[in-house]
Image (cartoon, rainbow, N blue to C red; front, side, top):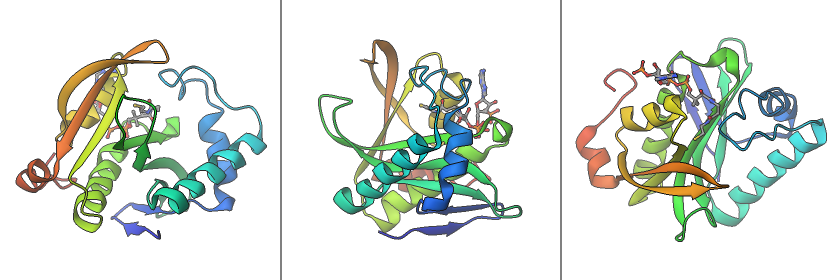
Length: 183
Ligand SMILES: CC(C)(COP(=O)(O)OP(=O)(O)OC[C@H]1O[C@@H](n2cnc3c(N)ncnc32)[C@H](O)[C@@H]1OP(=O)(O)O)[C@@H](O)C(=O)NCCC(=O)NCCS
């Protein structure tokens, strides 16, 4: 699997070993981990393990999370993309996710990257349905999912915290024809 997507301001591409510093900045920040189990990483080796895990997903499942890079500065912003999720719900599914460094919050980047990920999943990979979960208190994440067209399905507990589960089908996506400018 090889993905390289460019938007006006972003590059969305496969993870590379050189992203370890960026992942460390992202995942060592306690605020980023508020709704992710409150267990930020502490070492660069843990960042490298995260990248290895994502690369394994590319290999085994043919799909996985993607790095988001600032096109102008080449800075590592975070990640988005679709993962084949096993063990979170009582069924396996393709999951949309995102995680950004704090300095990039509030600029519409998660929304933009999610739209590109959905485009990739539905148009390039022919997926029929994509799911997503968010802690019920993670208002920004719930809002992103609603903005890009996800429908609320049900609630579930993940690591003892209540989460909302959403889905979007291929036909809903095709009907909505969302772009970063018409969410
Ligand atoms: C969730 C996250 C990816 C959002 O990224 P982002 O680029 O800031 O999101 P966007 O700017 O595209 O959209 C955020 C939306 O939520 C809204 N929002 C943000 N904080 C909010 C809050 N506290 N209450 C209500 N709405 C809020 C924004 O106003 C915006 O909606 P709008 O465009 O209608 O105004 C980012 O906060 C993050 O990385 N958090 C840490 C990791 C994480 O929680 N990941 C998700 C796990 S499910």
